[in-house]
Amino acid sequence: MGFAEQYASPVGAKLGTSISRTNDFKELFYVRWGHIWFNVFWGYDLNIKVMLNVYRSDGICERFIVDTDPHDVQWDRHKRVTRDFYIHPFPMKLGHVTRVTFSFIAHHNNRSIPSEHEYLLFEEWQLRDERTHHRNITMDGATPNGYRTRELDGWELQRDVDWANHHFDSLHLTPKFTKGQPYHPYHPKPYIHERIDATIYKQHENPHRRQSIKVCVDCIDDTDFTNHLIHAHWNGVRVQCIVDWRKMTLTNSDNYIRLKQSGIDLLGVFCTPKDSLIEVAPDMHNKFIIFGDEDVITGSFNITFDRWWANWESGMTFRSRGAGRLFDNIFQSVRGGVIQRYGIDPYSPFNLLYTFGRHFTLNGKNYRPHNAIISEIHRAKHSIKLVLFLIGELRGEHHDSVIDALIHAQKRGVDVRIILNGHLARQGSPGKEHPMSEELKRPLLPSIMRLKEAGVSVALVYGVDDFKVPYSPIHSKYCIIDDHIVLEGSFNWYNASVFSHDIVIVAANHQVAEPYLFEFDQIMRRLRIFW
Image (cartoon, rainbow, N blue to C red; front, side, top):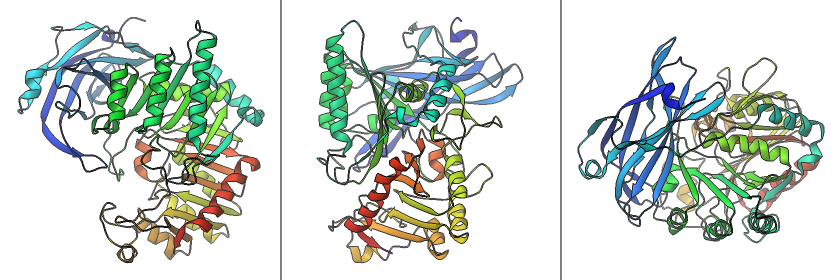
């Protein structure tokens, strides 16, 4: 198949001036932004992804993946430019940047093709100079490119989907809930560490067959988890981690420093599209881990149990080789491979839906999380119970809103009950200190006001204790429809999620729904509710 240079050529790059960014802890960082331009010798259907390599003076190399957008499109050629990416030249706990290089990946005929070379992008002196810099990309300083991607077999994925929907029990699907208690038996943390240990044991039992742990989670800033991953890496397990670029770059966390120093394959994802519908910055928001070939956990939770131990989160585990492959299809695509296409039935008992997935229905159209959410609400007959971190005017295929769908469901006699994170349901800065008396005076977001004015039951939840900054522990993102259909995953119900990397599981099964119904009632009983 050759190399990607047969289909595209990098021609130029730009390094912008410093801009300031802050993280969740209000720590300040100064980063440089950049773009890379390509000439593509093929039509619009050929895609390019860029692998950015940031080399530091302490020997660490940080890797990031960046998407590109087409322009000047002709039938047999076009041009591409990367979306915004950012480089942190002088971090507090790492060495300074000595050089930045890149390779690229061409997507053609359902396969990913690596570039032959890794090209020099920026040098240390350019990053020390605060001025804007332009650079022509040449072979000067180019080296062989060792980064490789892979794809799964689309026909095998189709068989996995069909088998799961005829043998639902083969998924061995088990709901998980944190309940704000890190040592609760349903908490995902014990499961995660048990599976890491089991993977290490398998590696020792059969050292000739390499075991793997694949982490694809927005943020993994947890000391126990980091220690255990590094221990698995030292014991021969192949550990691969994918996180959002902000969590990997805009941080002074010792956990990320140790991951970078350990030699674990750590990849940051730049998710920086632009669209008028986007309310907040999109990100690599997937939350799943694959242990070996068949054990998977996914849900609403980041691996930040040190920091957010009191959050109420939810998720699911699977023990199924087929489910493992379906998740791995997503994992490999985030790493730069081509996501494989397969058919689904929206009415089937199980569907795993990804925002950039190529799962299609009988009409040939892709069916993605926002399509499923609005469709399932429209099909609801008796009840909708919804627990969300945040909700907005999520738009469907025909620009219909999820808020409209919920209101219409209420009007046609469906019992609609919604639990929301009360703190984030209000307008204004969520990080401001004030007493609860002032918190309850903050105006609600327009989408939530529309629900309440239409008579929909909306419970605004807060923790049982007061803090300087009011706190709600709700971070779940699940829905139970007609007491047997569960929608679960990382997908927040607003438009930015359509442009983020996110997942929704649709499981139509009474046994799966029962723990979610119990969890819904527990939230109403155990936390503070304001109407």
